[in-house]
Image (cartoon, rainbow, N blue to C red; front, side, top):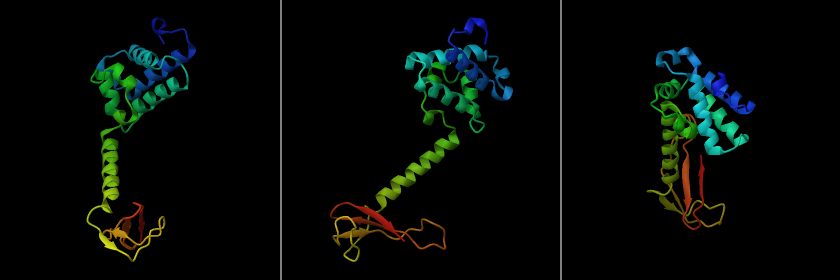
Length: 173
């Protein structure tokens, strides 16, 4: 670490070194003509300003930045930081979701939509029956939806059930 960037605190200096090394991953930093040491020092300074101590929260924040900048599946994040597209103050405060690669964001969005659809499935359109008994309130006023293939083709269909009395939900094959 160049002497003019040294903070005099071993924890902070080590964090700056590790952030600079993360920015230098893959040697593509040369294309941008940026000083990784000064960028790392500025990122670390923004993290310290926000957290106000070099405690575990500070170390976790720095560690998160390092792992996301080094992630081989997300080279776009590092390149955007090096190019200045993402401000250094912004990378210091971004959440894990914001730093995620486009592929991971798409996967999370798909899983969220699937969970919402599954949650709403028993509510919409089901068939009311007194053949199924709720395990919670023991009443037989239930609604079930059409059976859905949630597992492999050789497994039985899954039926989603909603108790109209207490709102309990369950599924069975």
